[in-house]
Figure (tube, helix red, strand yellow):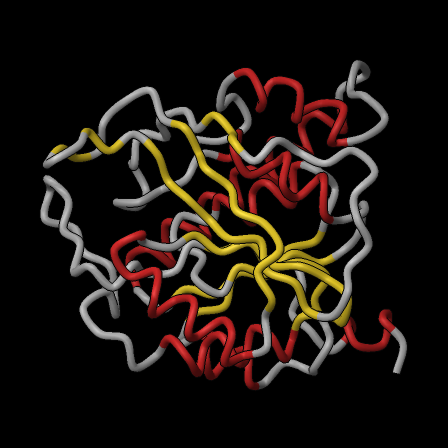
Length: 252
């Protein structure tokens, strides 16, 4: 079955509402080109407004979700997954159990402190995980990336599109499909759409799903408006990515 036939079976450029294990299980194997996701950190997180994250206090979902993620990812492709350094052993065990091979590590440098204990915490981190033997990028990104503050308006751990767009651009081609099984605020999906890729997000929480769906509608509206203007560049990437890398202009 070729790529076009497989993707015709997927609800591309949409956000699915439900459990990502169940939703990915319904997807064909080897059907997505890239996974970029920020799963629950298993730390029972609660922000200053009392917002929480589903399944952040237990780990029974972790291995089944990683197995499904590995299954739906195409051979010789990569995934980037954020994680908590305090639970790195659990994430590593789940990734290896699924079949992923760690091939890189990324530090996202923040200008603010999200928490302070023995140290002032000013970074996030993610592993670059391979299925098979992916080709090396022609111009590898640095493994330290600036992460501007997103404002966390839509989700308590909302990632800025500015930090994610270069990852999508580096590890995919225009028109390829980016999956985020833990969509949250849909920053990964926005980064995919704004760089000319297809997206598929999954979110189980009712409120976050509503916020994510509304956000993607706004991003689509912006793209349509720019396309209809006489000054709109030839590609979405030309229009949005330069400003994304300087500031978070293309999303909330």
